[in-house]
Amino acid sequence: MTPYKRMEYQVDFTKASLLEEVHEYGSRAAETSWHRLLRLQPQCGFGQLGLCCRNCAMGPCRVSFFAEGPQTGVCGAGPGIMAARWLARTTSTAASIRIQRLYSALDHAGGLNRLVEPFTAILPSNPTSLLHAQSIPYTVFGSKLYSRLRKADLLPKGPMPEIAATLTAAAMGSEADAERLALTALRLALSDSWVTSTLLSAATEAFTRHREAGYKTPGQAFTILAACLDEDAMDRLRRALESLGIQAEVLELACEWRGENPVAADLAMQELLAYSGGVSLVAYKWPCVTPATLKAFKGNAVLVDMKTASMSDIVEALQKASRKTVEKQPRNIPARRYSLTALYTETDNLKAIADAVEEGAVEGIALLGGCGNPKQTHGVSAELAEKLIGNNILVLSYGCTSAVLAAKGLLDPEKASAKAGDGLKKIYKAESIPPIIHIATCNTWIQAMHAARIVMEQLGLGLDEAPVAAIAPEATGERMLSTLLTGAASGILAATSALMPYQGSKTIRTLLTEKMAEKTGGKLLYNPDPSILLDSTIQWIKERRKT
Image 1: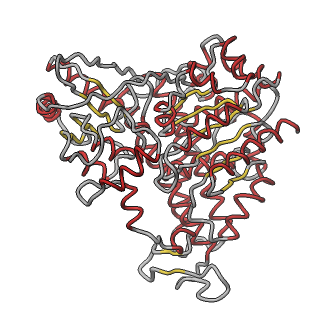
Image 2: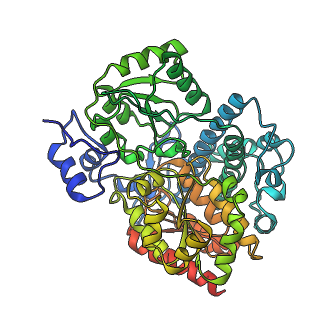
């Protein structure tokens, strides 16, 4: 018996077709993240709350959440330092991933010597100098946010010096003040997003030239999964296909989905995609391809590691994959990415959105992202998106969440408009601006923040005053934490249902909520119930409109 029913592109996000199916057919030979999560229950409460540390050879240490029991580790670190060290190391990982991704894009393009709008107004004439800069120009943040960050002593340097400062502070014996260490991590998160993600956005908008390969092989479904490939890897794959005279359907994982090719799956769905039998070859390179995913695909598809593969290796893999018989061709879900450049240049869409916000047709803007977390009901992001647009809140989606929205048909402007409130219906009819806009990948998510910032600045508002919120109910990886921290530190609500390992420290919880609101106007909100999270987000946006 086939362990999973054959899927069409993405499984239907219902209990009957996903969760029951997983439990019925799951086994060690064909398991998913849902099986492993169940097997690990109960998960360690110390780890979930961030009350443990294994950073040095004196540990591992764990401290008590209550008055009884150990209150510090061997070195004297309590809950605050442990949580702050986790923030520091996590944001450093996120920043390193985006920097490495940027280096790859710059190598492929031969540098960043030309910019497209609106990056010409955002970045200096020598953009890559920002990576090591001791100060960042106000144009990167916008004048209002720049002033607020400077007043709060959160104005970051370039990402390279911020990584060095953050990891140094996180070392044992280096920083004994939990709040100060956490603020160092916040500066890195801001630099990671506003500098590195902006540079990467500019590079990909200026130089990415993907080609969609049409599925035309008679009588045979030949499908390639481009799993988090950068520009160089995509180009080598395309050239290998051309050298063989082969045309294939190319799918992309959601975290690096740029919109040129169809989207295949989010983080949680990779293994189910593997077991569907609908993919002939997997070409992979960047993060978000888990060890379990590669194991699942190993028996169902040809694998090629684009980090080390030569052109002859790629050609050989394609020849082998083209001979595989695939029972079901994945279904193409049409969806378009509206990049920041497209929104800026196509009939002045951002001005039209600003006008709609001012008139009240659009209540505000929600930045919707996330990874796909088996701890949440899968597809919950689509439910939240429908309720947001039903309340006339424009949704800018990015990363893996866009795969969920695409599978639900919500990236089809007509279908989304049918579920939207009257205000969003009006702007779609008048300006062809859809209620839900897929704007960026996980690495270039800052395009959503820039779009919101530019819209609100046209109304004379900074982000700390604007009806803007970021919501990520299924946040999972390091980059999503950095994204959420950036949102809060930039003056907006950043909301998630993912339990992050800082909740065990009252010092860090207070810093990221009450104190953050005083410093920047934003805050980080956690609630395990996505419906409550949504209500809080809508309330935040409506309260901002009143003030």
